[in-house]
Length: 87
Image (tube, rainbow, N blue to C red; front, side, top):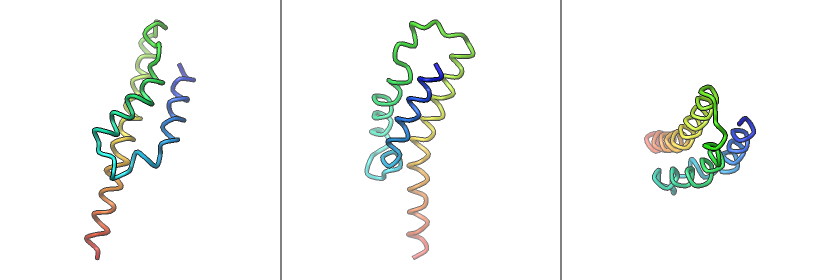
């Protein structure tokens, strides 16, 4: 379980330049996350018979990664908007 979370986090980090990209719409970023990162995080997890605490840990990791995909993009857009307003 812990290894799966670490592996999905490494994959998230390898795409760190893509998540905040303004060129990639939120729908595409979420679709990419789901197909690349979430698939690694959840692959064959239903066969493991997770405990409630393990399910919560998996859910926490998933929510944290989703926030990062969405937030990174929002932060970059807000920074660009502020820079445009200063000129």
